[in-house]
Image (cartoon, one colour):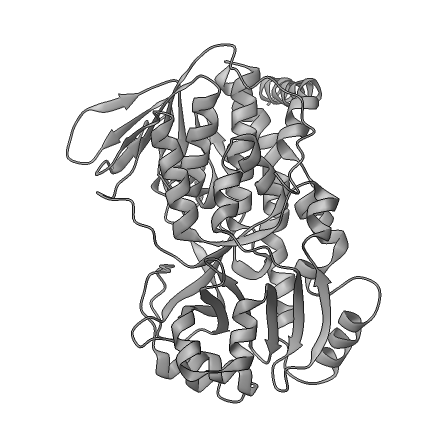
Amino acid sequence: MEYFQDDMEWNPKAEKPLRIIIVGAGIAGLVAGIGLKQSGHNVVILEQVSKIAEVGAGIQVAPNCARILGRFGLLEKVMEKANMLTKNSLRRWENNEELGSAPLMPEIGKMYKSPLSVVHRGDLQRILLEAAEAQNVEIRTSSKVVKADENFGPRVQLQGTNDWISGDVVIGADGIKSDMRRQMMNLHGVTDRSSPTGDAAYRVLIPKRKLEESNNKEALKLLEGNVGMRWMGPGGHIMAYPIKNNTVYNMVLLHPDKPDSANDESWTRQGSKKEMLDFYKSWNPLVTSLLSYVPEGEVMEWTLNSHRPLPRWIQNRSVLIGDACHPMLPYVAQGAAQAIEDAGVLTVAFTKTSDVPLALEIYEAVRKARGEAIQNSAATTRKALHLDDGPEQEERDRRIRGPGKNPDLWADSEWQHFMWGTDVMKDTWENWTDYKSKVEGHALEAVAASTYT
């Protein structure tokens, strides 16, 4: 496949098959299920909804997760539905002036041996679900997990029954409202809560026919091209690009949250087109014309909250992945990628060993610091993108135009290398012995400390 070159040499067959319970059939849970099943494990995914729907809007498939999808045999079908962006254009809100741009494909694909693309979340979800079913991953819908084992042993209880489902390990992939996380944090005496960022986001999809009906040549040019548009303005920014093979224009519009908004972190809540148009009415004519084509009743809005890093991602024989342990804000577009990295590392860990506590300790050693660094980068990027016009904004624009570190981390080459150039599966496989020594050393230190206290 073009741009995908896998230089990881590994044997994806587990030394001993395990029974693995995954809570949640989102992106994190499905990719973990596929990888672990391919390694020879017996996997059951418990999903609370009765039918797994294809919902959402555009998401980025960055090189750091594309290479994992490639290894699991999923990338080719994803790329059939994806758009590869040639660049990201950084622009002023008021006059649409391009301040600078960050080259993407094909340069990024050649550099990192994996493509960068954007795809509708529903398309990705469907591809993953079909692959999981084709590989005989057991997926039980209408199966809401209401309780984990009090000591986080490998069992969970389903709603409406006193029975427990048991295995060798439990993976909590139950998303941003994770019950697994809440119960695990209670064990550590930590209150599981989030803090408002002050922002909310609209997600809108503009069908091609709307632009054709109006004969808006400038908007059609955006749809037919493969350029990411990043408009930056006072208190908000917009990220926009084509998806579904250039038949839909995807826009994510960040803006100040309303004081009385529901703080439920739901991205399927309906927003107001009138309020959206009112906030962006002073932005450039291209933006305002695009927003006028959004179908009535199809504006989605959600509140953006930040979550503090957790003390642990693992407990006994249970582990958290994806938004359950590192909910990502959209400023650097790494939510799906980081969830897929979690799945990739767990697949390697349970290929290398059947020692569940060791595998989970190494997973946390590989993933926690990296995942949280990317999670925490959101605050820096948010500030840079939402500056009021004035001296700080002028300095930001100067830095975007000139050489050196880009204040928009998503467009900064050094930060891109950290995000996209790291191969977490290869790192885990090749440095297994070092990670093993590290986590075993920490365990001995903990035993020694408890002995003398």
